Image 1 (cartoon, rainbow, N blue to C red):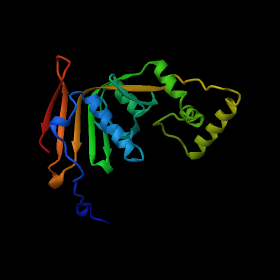
Image 2: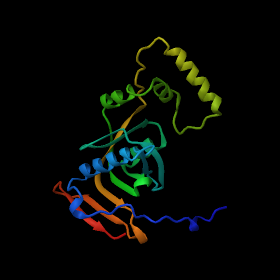
Image 3: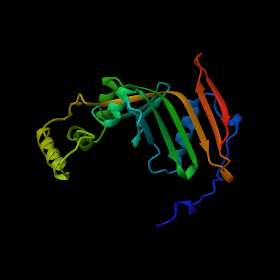
Image 4: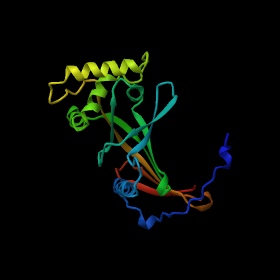
Length: 214
């Protein structure tokens, strides 16, 4: 087995200066996201979503960002999934984007709410037909007997909806929007003296930006 302590990489691609940071973290994020897409990153919208249940145990998984604007950051899922159940108990979460090839991370924390049914339907019907049927197949996070169970259910639904131009949005599926109260932008630097800038939403509704020690 390879010793993980022996795996090392020096970060020296770029640095961050306060004067170059946009005072609006949403605009700063948009710049970083566009750079991640332009860099050829395979999944620039992949983000780690961390939630906690009422007992305080955290859980994390990778989901895909599908909408972001001044209102927040949206992902879509089964409302019966573990993450959805945990968000129902504790509607606070964090997101982390890691763009390895740019030596960058962005972490975002905030409160979470469901998107409207109209927003959920708009995204659902933009998905490939197979993905729409997959949403109907999966009772996400529930125990199932085997892979064949999923394949059989998919075949049944393909037959059921063969004559349908549009597959109805299931009532157990939709979106969540994280409304940020904190952003952190991280740029790798030599000797592990990384650049970190934090934006915190103040009671007055403005963003306070501070440099953090690495």
